[in-house]
Image 1 (cartoon, rainbow, N blue to C red):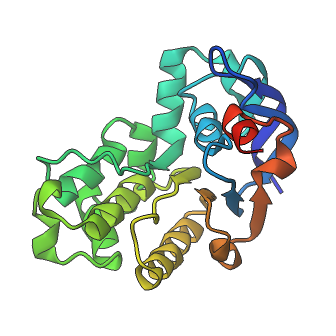
Image 2 (image 1 turned 45 degrees about the horizontal axis):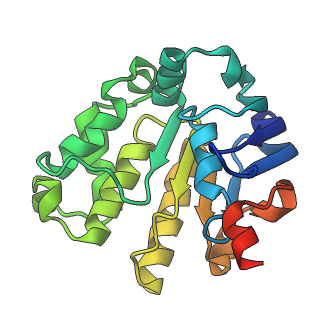
Length: 234
């Protein structure tokens, strides 16, 4: 089976801090759904920023689908992220003045690679995804600022998934939802991801979500670092 994510000899520290991450080796198979769990301050979001090419490690190699991110310039990493990675941010990061559909379309606006993977028009795909995620036709035309938190979350998921990115990164996107809405959202997220053979890396502090995923990984199992936040609580 092909490898989607491979980390080797990776270390990362924020300025003036002890190492946040120290990972000897970790890999994720293509098409796998992984729940990565860790306590607050353990380095989960830092790891996601490295995988997305937003930050770079002091040492080590990050390969996504055999591409070594350390060999890419900042502009090349931006393009790689736009082409191959869907990202659901914890705070969603929607543009409040754009409609739900317009926000979803941003997921392919800057990537011809993802546009080519669409089997129908981008607008039709966006509306289809939003309908499947529970937004009515009327809600899809509302500015994001007028939507509920749960609706905004589903818009963010559709934006990340449109164009079938090879990797979906989700940074605790369900923290504002009740248990029923959370579970339904995860089921739909994984269903849409599986249809595109998208590898899913879902980061959370909630171990109760583990049964939905192929693999459950504790950050402490792969990283030998003890960040300052953990040292202070030790």
